[in-house]
Amino acid sequence: MPSTPSANLEDVSREDAVALGVIKEDYSPPPPPPLKDFNDDLEASLTFKNDEEWQSLKRMFGDQIRQKDGKIAWRNDLIREAFTANKPFAIRLGEATPNLLAKLPPSVPKDLCAGKPLTITQNWLDRKRKDGTDHRAHFQPLETHPNDVPLTLEDLELLPEIWRNPDKVEKTGWSRLMLSMKSPNGGVYKAVVDYEKNLDLKTLYKEGVKNDL
Image (cartoon, rainbow, N blue to C red; front, side, top):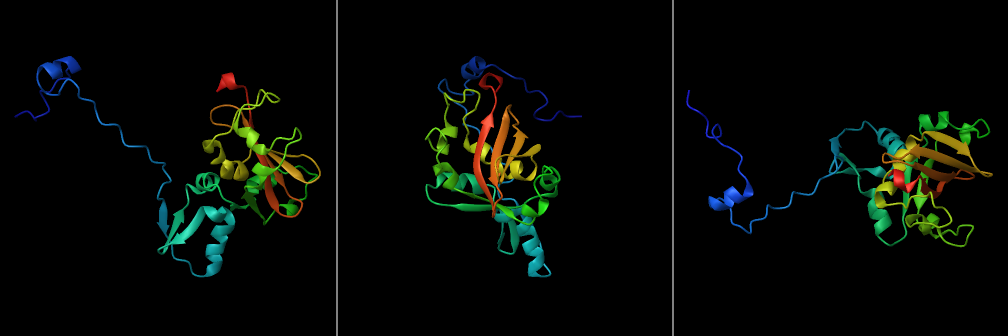
């Protein structure tokens, strides 16, 4: 049986390839294409019998989904675009999930959170901390909180997951919840949500020892 063209190929070093004239001495391989997120351009063709079916999905996922050309499109860059646009924004992340409601402490009635979406605006970045600095300080090292890890855009993009699937929910203050979720690369995310009237994000930070990251 005749061999295929690749059957007799062997790996050669860069020096041998240059000596054989296969590549030039100043050759550099092209950079690899940028990695795309799995959810980039994610779409699904769905037919709704009525508007209530669409609204049901919107209640679950909020502004992370939209209808586009007869399809449901996943807005993968929603958080990143909002926080880098340098203009006011308001994002609704969908209603409290059964998982979150099941973890509410007994002192917080479920009807205060059920059926309400979490709203994120730029206001939490402008609010002042007790030491007089605003909450943008969470994006840089803090001498007053040496175990806090500076936030990144990648951390912010996990806000929907922290909201929908927290590891722990605690009451903190008069009408606030502390949502905790372990970070994939070490540390713990802490999101504070106010539930007095609506569900509003008040702050997000990340606890952890930097040397462990």
